[in-house]
Length: 134
Ligand SMILES: [Cu+2]
Image (cartoon, rainbow, N blue to C red; front, side):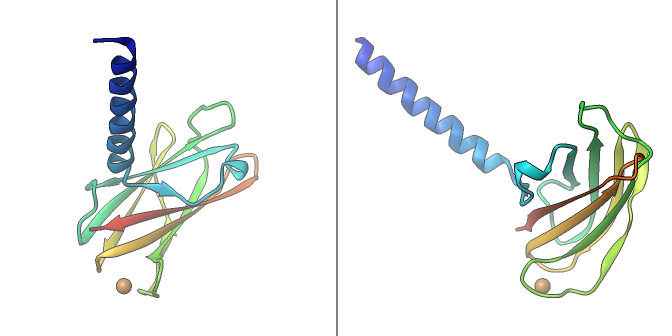
């Protein structure tokens, strides 16, 4: 195999890997990188989501990447395109910088999970996530 063929193969593999990675990342954050100096990330159980009850895990880190335990994490869950009623409250601290909230995904489609995190130093960080119920 000459080096041109090898390069073409490597390029194809890189594209395939990128597609797989894109397909496996079901969560997309709508917060821009510019306003996320502190880290707020979201994961779900089940993942991917299904219709019905779901647990949202919100992980909070400070600017140096350390988990933040004494934050107040408010959440608001609704569909992106219609008002499905109010599902909001304060997420429960689980330790290690993780906070959990339960939502009821009563309809398939795109949902928005808005989080507002009040850090122990009093600063407030907002971050919205879009999740899909297939
Ligand atoms: Cu709906």
